[in-house]
Amino acid sequence: MRKKIVAGNWKMNLTLAQGEQLINDILATGLKLTEGQEVVICTPFPYLTKAKALLKNYQGFYVGAQNCHSEKAGAYTGEVAAEMLKSIDVDYVILGHSERREYFQESNAMLAKKVDQALASGLKPIFCCGEPLEIRQAETQNAYVAKQLEESLYHLTEEQLKDVVIAYEPIWAIGTGLTASAAQAQDMHAFIRSQIAAKYGREAALRISILYGGSAKPGNAEELFACPDVDGGLIGGASLVAADFTAIVSKLG
Ligand code: 13P
Image (tube, rainbow, N blue to C red; front, side, top):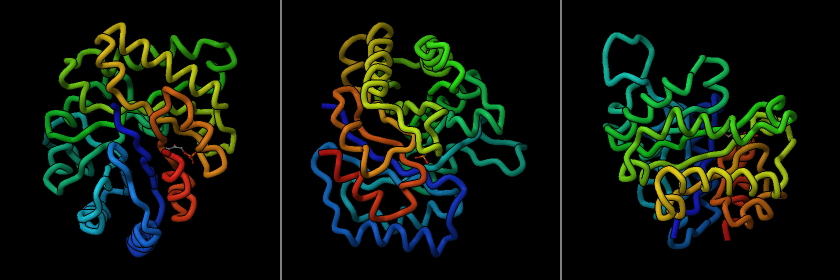
């Protein structure tokens, strides 16, 4: 069966000492993952090595970056390549987060190249998709998300897709306290899975993990994770508080 995953996206928060404390606090809760469950901690670049060292001996705990560059290497001052992340044992990389799309002009075409770099280096992309409020209000969110998937993922082979995780993050729910209802999340996740089935077949669709992100909290995680097509969460704000994050992970069931 497909993996259940809770990934914490720290975004641009915490010092190294604070991040170390947070990971130690999470581990100190004695949180146990069952077969097929994973926790991914996505820290800022400078903390990845430390995070990996702290989590190395814990079954099911992985480390993720929040971005990588679309080229393999070269004169791109200030940027980080997928291969560099792999060389420090990073497992996952978030790609296409709405904040990257909005503030750093990341297009679907550019993200297709980032996905390629990640996969070529042996990183697993957590590919984010999701619509802005005006698209939801116009009820055209399915077409919007379908285009994101098509333009950034559908050049992949079925074999490559096995290493991809999808995160549905409606932009209107990110950091706003306004969560998608369980029904809204389930509808979109089922739609995404049906799109994957149409392109890659039923087996590939049943295998791919689709995470929900956007104001997920201990109080709503259980209902969201109970939806048949919601395979976990990509957590922003609540991933910065050990008790909240572990409470969310415990709702994976
Ligand atoms: P919040 O959980 O803070 O709404 O953020 C969600 C998110 O953007 C995770 O990537």
